[in-house]
Image (cartoon, rainbow, N blue to C red; front, side, top):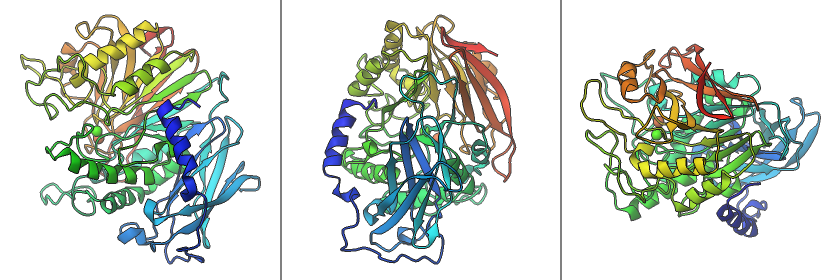
Length: 520
Ligand code: FE
Ligand code: CA
């Protein structure tokens, strides 16, 4: 596996001291658990496929919104099974994990020793309660050349803004290998009580700060049956963006000028809850200092996916808020959005023979002048790579020095679809291209959205590298072969009412021998 050295070292440290994962100690065990409502009310999930396995996840919460999810504060044994068939006639792995109160009664099991590139089925049992069955596919064997890989990209799922019908559609996508989740899995804001503009469905409670607050927010989101269907259908490769902690946070800083020592406590609670509620590996186990979230996943020699963390190590935004009128990109040549260590890790990892390199990350990379129509002066968001232009230039240099023509970037955060090219030079947006970028809209954030975008024409005047701007909700599906990369942009007609319909807005093509988009 391609673990960064820091992750590998942490993993060994954790594995050495992992008595907590070793089994029940007998001092505070619920010997015969029994429930009067479904302990698997939050569903099941799988994540981070490797050629020989993946993570399976659940979290016991018979009463999701009640204190401790309705669980007693004791250890509970949870049986798990992995089978080759949906009827569990051929069980290939099974065992027992401990759901502990310290980890919100979540269960993470790293399954290994499976065959590559095939589907497996998994389920959990506690007392006489059994979970639904989930499905996950292992990755192709290292070095092999799979004919085709299909990833979906999704995220930004504000509960209050709409229903997750897009996830129901995603759960029915044919032959997905995995879903990259770019973050904003939850939103931290208080329940919207504006009677004039009520939310589609309200958050439970106020703005979230404590570990129990974050746990309850995840529990509320995870009660959604469409979200549960997506998790049960396909493995997620989970990252995080800002709203898992606080809007527009940057390393040690939040947007409210909270002293970093105090924000660090909130961040630690939020990242623990992120771990508890995400199907991620032990390498992403939270520590008081944060989480190592950047990592690589290989799909044979066809795709190398570099999952980035653009929040934890970035400099504070130059204007300290997004879209401040007149905000200019920083001229500080040392500014960073990934941090030095991750930047070097990515640069090293781009030296490879894979057919495609996928940068799976959170915020817009391409230069984008987002001035209002008619405005004389350019405008840049400082919360995405536009706020860190020298860091973007270093990324481009890294791609160019390695002569890579096969880099595709998957992005989220903007709640609108942006498809375009990252130019080699910021000043020449219609000049030579370094990479194609696909920013997926949102599952629900922002509510229904418009067909098309009022600013599209105006924005394209200043941004010839931007080929599509659309503000409908939805997700993207990348269908990848050695010959071409096809991206379907799926959009929802409505998310503020149940049972919205999905359709394919358009399809883009990229070929590995030439950087950037080829419109289909
Ligand atoms: Fe968002
Ligand atoms: Ca975001």
